[in-house]
Length: 543
Ligand SMILES: *[C@@H]1O[C@H](CO)[C@@H](O)[C@H](O)[C@H]1NC(C)=O
Ligand SMILES: *[C@@H]1O[C@H](CO)[C@@H](O)[C@H](O)[C@H]1NC(C)=O
Ligand SMILES: *[C@@H]1O[C@H](CO)[C@@H](O)[C@H](O)[C@H]1NC(C)=O
Image (cartoon, rainbow, N blue to C red):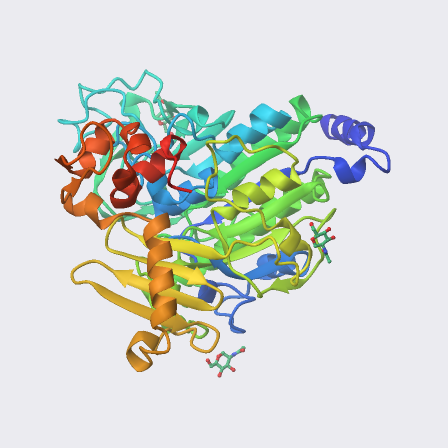
């Protein structure tokens, strides 16, 4: 009966010709965890696992061969949701867990969810791994070991600074994904676990009726916690959101961000998928079993859009937070250097597949230009016809034109920065070149031509320093301008050149204490741009 009603409502809501092209799309982002380009089909011509659903998505959409994130989880998530480079947020290397006092977003930075919600009435939801900082409901200091039962915590209180505080109407998430305590879901800021059902989970394998649930790090959690069910539970929640959406807000578009636990460790595939398909032990390695399950989850989400009549109107984006794990390098198809955590391609080149039936061609590849996870914000905003507020998404450039055609690169960004941790090493992409600067343990520079050397084996600054000295200089300067400043790390004093404090020696902390100082001190912008760049609204010199 309800299903019939939904069909009727959908039919009634269907726009007549002409309105269709201007209709705002629904948006579904599926963010995988630790999935590199070598883990999935469509990149290096090799498949370790049969992934029919991802292939189907590719056949119906676009596969981007040159998409980049950061080599780490949290900064990449911030890039995706904020449209900013990581150091523009609250902390230079992002905010991760409960220890943080606030999440990574400054008040004046609106997430893509918030912009869609405020400007176009999107119904927004987040499901899965948060990892962008939360304000613990109490003093954290004495509670690290027993977060859920600690007397200093009041779990009846709403946990602030979570997804609902950056524009998500609804949320169902864990702070760290599948791997770290507390092993408990949080719904709209309230913990789901009842205090009487909290238990201490020891690291190791725990047999459940679904398979081997694995605890990676000991800690408190829900008595019913079962890692084998983590991702299917998220898909189930996503479906509940879609049903509610159709029931209550079918006239509005939705924005659904699902951040999967797959393929992060622990690799604990369920014995069977919900539809009865055997999973654990079928692909030769638990990690590959999880990859296989991830494909089933992608399939379940897409078929849910199909059965609900939403597929045509939904922009689907599949991507990952960073490159693959070390164990992936053993598999065929892994030809990139490095892995998750590295500044080499294996660390930050990620799969990106986009499908939008009303607009995008089907079954095409995008390989002529690079894009960043931070560009997805502006791309969605353009397709959804919303205006980006001035102080938001400052490092996001729409690639909607490029999505339409591989040759349509005239509006593309010229440079893309990549940061590994806050101050360890950084890189910049320009045309087919990649310049890397290592700061620690020692200063070092490298330059690669990715067009002929995707494996980053021939450092041009060593093999042909003269020829590339001008390019090196140019990219170093550019990277310096968009990135973090080593002064910010060493806190080496700089001499002020303007204003009433002229001649005074100050550290970057002086600017942090009052970012407005960036406005009158050119030296602040140049030497401490990780500070001033984050407060760019105050800066006049720094463009
Ligand atoms: C996978 O790659 C290896 C070499 O890296 C190649 O020998 C093999 O034929 C490839 N398999 C497929 C199915 O493409
Ligand atoms: C504790 O968990 C059990 C087992 O799942 C469940 O039946 C019970 O309702 C839970 N108790 C509370 C108070 O949530
Ligand atoms: C390329 O981009 C331009 C500018 O947005 C657009 O008008 C044009 O239709 C695009 N061309 C193709 C082939 O998609």
